[in-house]
Length: 144
Image (cartoon, rainbow, N blue to C red; front, side, top):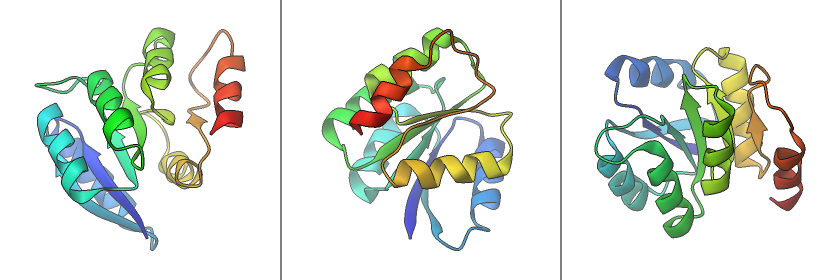
């Protein structure tokens, strides 16, 4: 089973993700967090395999949460799920330790693919994100 923690400040987003991902036989939603501090605490206590994390979180933003988890709980792989497709956010998320960056507009099967790939040690970038250069991301994939 792939243990997944959902972290988004919007309840409806967490509910939709939980409903969608619960249909996968090898996924287990182990918890939900609505802010940065709660996310950090739940990652420490639940030790999920995958954290689906929004960037704009109250208390501690998603980029800082990413840095702390990558440093203190490296067994948890982070997938950013955001409405922001700006290249600066994407680059910073990967620089801080995220393994994937998804847009909230992504199709359900894209999210499922990302979770499985990241769980297997790869990186993932939503195909709809326009990057000036994907060389840096490809280099990260070779190092993971």
